Structures are given as C-alpha cells and as structure tokens.
View 1: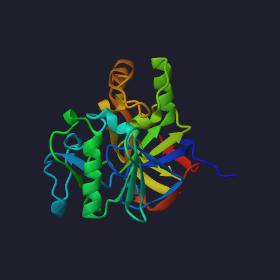
View 2: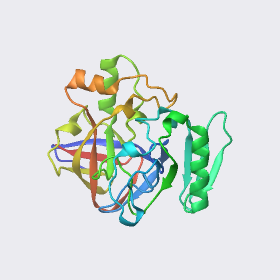
View 3: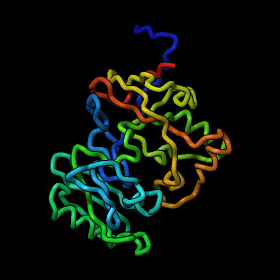
View 4: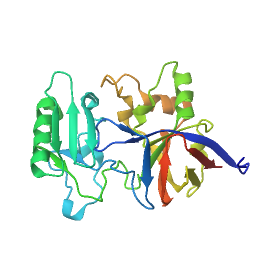
Length: 263
C-alpha cells in the first residue's frame, strides 16, 4: 500500500473537460495527455469575435474575453451544444429549433459556415459586429494569460450549495479538471508555486481563479438564475473558486486518478 506524506491531501480526478470553442459547451473526456508548459488538449482552441477584437493570428496574444462570444455576455450560448472531432477538425452543433451544424473549423469555409450558423442562432442584440471564427495554434483563448489548466474542488462547490440552500452545477465554473476529496476551499490556501499532482502529472499553482458573471448562467437552461458572485462575496469575502495550474512534468491523466494537494 502506498504511504503518503501527512502534509498531502489526497483526492481523485472526478472528471475532465475541454472547451474547444471558447464560451461554448464542455466536452467530457476520459483521459488527457498533459504536456509540460502546455495547455489542456484542444481547450479554447477557437474563439468567435463579434466585431473587430484586435486579435492578430500572425502575432497571437491575449485578448480580453469581452471581445468574444462568451457566456458572461451571451447566456444563450449554453443552449448551443457542441462537440469537436480533433482528428477531422469538424465541429458539430445542435440547438433546439435550429438545423444542426457540422463543419471543419480548420478550413476557411468551415469557419465562415459556423459564423453564419451562429449569426442566425444569436439574438441581434448579442452581435456587436460581424462574427468571425479565430484560431492560431498553439495560442489558446483562455480567460487569463496564465490560465493553462483550470481545476475546481467539488467539495468547495458543495459547501457553496449548502450555504445557498440550493443545487449548484459544478459546470458553471467551466473547469478542465474537477477534483473530489479535498477539504472545501483548501485549494485557496496554497502558496504560490505549490505542487499539485494529477495522476502522475506534476503541476504548480499559478494563481487563484477570480470568477465572473458567467457563473450566474445555468448550463442547462441558459438562464441567469444564481448570483454566484454575490454568494461568494457574502459567504466567504472573496470572488475565487478554483485554481490555475501549470504543467511541470508531462503525463497522462485519467478520470479516477489520485489528485494530491500539498498543504
């Protein structure tokens, strides 16, 4: 039997999720290959600008999420259910009352077709300008320039649920990795550069995740139905839920793998 150091809190990887198109629905995956210094595979690989965003694919750099189609500004995006085939580059989208879409986002024609589908799907008020699908690998459209891998502690979400007196879907927090078994909010007590092991992948803490109004959106109904920011502020005196990690040593991570948090 493996013996662990007493200063290590042991949990497990409950689920893994990627978001191929920024602002759209998650895809659950059973395992991922994390690469040192890299992002979560196929995560936030594409984004849709609504009017000129200032993003230059030839000199890809961080651009604030407010310039893209995101849940914080367009809750209706939760109703466009997406899936992405990394082998073919085909994005498939389904939404009630709309013809389904499928197109290769690696091609200009596929990008244009998705932008046209989305233009028809979204309300006019949600479109500040021409919709355009962007990508510039290896750049990723994360909410923070240091947002390599995002992790949420399910026990923290449960504590929030208890205080609110109502269910809170963890997918509101749009994490790559959901961990079960850590004490509630213990992830927020880590020192900078603290070590966290996901399976055999070594990672280090980059920063805490400060939340935005995207968390107010119910991922099933597309409605703003819980003021998560107000709850975090009132109950805990901060706006954080989750942490950003940077991969220090490459490894495969699977659902069910140990998640070791060094205190």
